[in-house]
Image (cartoon, rainbow, N blue to C red; front, side, top):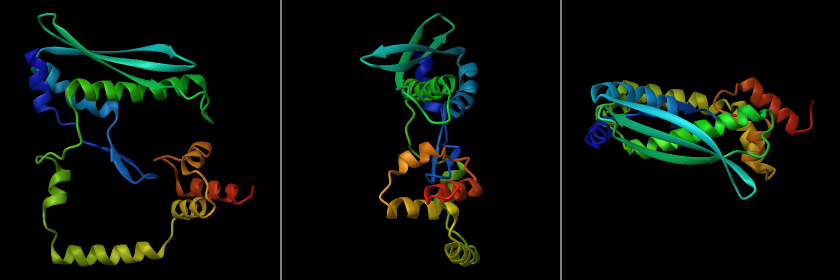
Length: 198
């Protein structure tokens, strides 16, 4: 399917999301879909996403399928699985399934469009990483870093506490619903609760 080859060559899906808790950039299914839509139109193709639930052993999985069609009716599809957690604190069944669906769809799209983690030379991120900063900018950033280092955030205090008490970071993040949208106040509350306060 020649259209898929063209889409794969041209598709740039940057990691526009930022996980503040983990300190890393990532892309989600919506980022990929936003990047691919113009290329679908350009190549007279359309994309269908579908989900099904599969039981494998004792666990349930969401199977997401990304299927690309051209205007001649040819198609190609890729599927990916994501396991539903048996229970996830603070989430009802629909939210658990929705989270697994989003994850599976992202990886089905990654597989279909051959998305990897290379940095593209035409992105702002690439330019920021490769251009040399001016001397004033460097000095200003050094000063900012020094000031930031003096202030320990609630997130940093929580991480330090978890490590010092040999707790599982993933469990703490799950139990207290800590993620990229967590505020400093929420980190403070979680730390207070961990220390035994109410």
